[in-house]
Length: 185
Image 1 (cartoon, rainbow, N blue to C red):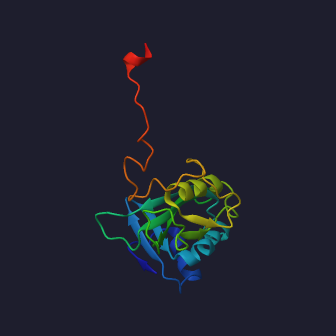
Image 2 (image 1 turned 45 degrees about the vertical axis):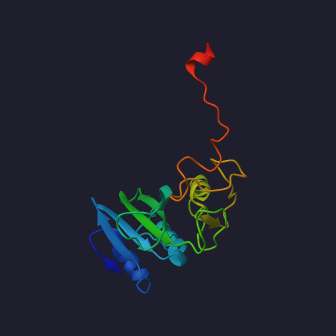
Image 3 (image 1 turned 90 degrees about the horizontal axis):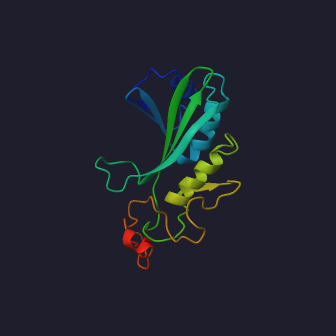
């Protein structure tokens, strides 16, 4: 585990349990982020929830990030970020997982590389947030109980929060008619 900070109380527990896993720790504005490999993400999140030294009993939020065109180089194009809270210790920690697409992302192809295990078995409230990440970024969550679109209609052909998605959309506005105030009177 490489670390920019070593003062977060949960880091020692993570290091003692996952010493052989390549984990990176970063701190920004007194917020600690643990960057984990995708294949170990669920296991590490379960540990953070179940281990009495950590006891992160609340998933505050999870979201997706697209780093296309980001001014600072990132390890991968996409990430999923989990924000956790331990009521017992009054601690917060962020867990980040990077994912690189294996196919062109501007199309509608399903990419098997953009996939993680669901955490709905750990925190049932993750169901809607995972659906939103799937809908907006195309990142699938394996074994999710109801992985379907939540914001866009079911046949929408793309993922609108990807940065290669055109700002004006693909065909959404060609037949859209603007109505002026004068037309309403």
